[in-house]
Image (cartoon, rainbow, N blue to C red):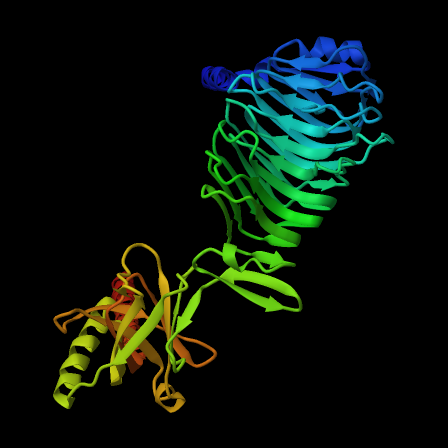
Length: 506
């Protein structure tokens, strides 16, 4: 047993080298911090506030800074002190970060946490549970590798009173290396610009970047999310996905800023959220696209809504939802699925059968229903409630519905007809008129009968009364009587044997 445990321990050590080699180092000052981050896999745990001075801090290995609820202060009148991550995985968490050049004129491409474009392709930044205030230009400036930013609060206002203030929360992109990352569960506020010709945003994304923005609140800004395809369009394509975020901007909640001859593709997908301010293109190129698949908007975004989605206006808001349901003109049959193309039309034609055909069909349908249910019940009073050819059409004709996607079809039938039966099945009939398959049917509270299928064809609704087959048990009384009789006979035999034995002894 001990040998087995030792073997498991060795295996665990081999599989988790980063955990085994990691060392937690208590940090109380700048010197301790700089020494700690030079050692690969160190965890630098702050035991006090850290005040930085001198040069920028360069990260070129795997290291973690756990602020432990403390503060890291830069120099408020010097923008040259910041964290530059060039290789490895840098993790920073549980810390307040402030006074990184916030009192001096804005410095282009500056950031508290900066991954330069010349950094390794494998560099990674993980930032969580941070509060960032009073900085120069950007809290994050990321141009290579990957990043995960979560539970971060960024206040872009600073202590600079000059006319050269320009602050933003997060800048991503601009470089020959692609940068990919997520911004989730975070807040960005108060981005400002005192330049007449320059706007600034809570999040700015440039070329050669892919960013997912999820559960993010951006407010008190002129621009919420700005995606640029103008200045650096030769670096590569960019993509931004926005989900479940609230963006409130004085001017544009989201925009693509481009030029007509931009070479790179810029794609923005909005899946959900609340957007106050314009959603728009500036100098749109043929390579730019904003695709909206959900959310609430303060302005009309009709031209950006994806096929398969609908826009409705309510109380001054434009609501985009998935087009999940189409109906026949009379409303008696509906077809439901996820993001149905907006040009689909449901066509349902009820077929008429002669009495002999109905009888033949019902016989085959009942046999198949019983077979599929292992003959656990009998069928009484079955009736074909309708037989329908069901198709979906678009501008090109009938659409082929086949594959793994499930669609829900519902029928409205006469309530008197439905009330006659306790069970319902949908029966699939192939192109030769043969009964091929049965589907479970659901009787809904609104009186409709529905079922799910992955293909369209001819279907019939069969109503019937099912009676469970009760298996007969042996007659319990007869069995007991038999066992009592056998017991009495045995007792009588035993009594006679004892009587004879006693007579011989006398």
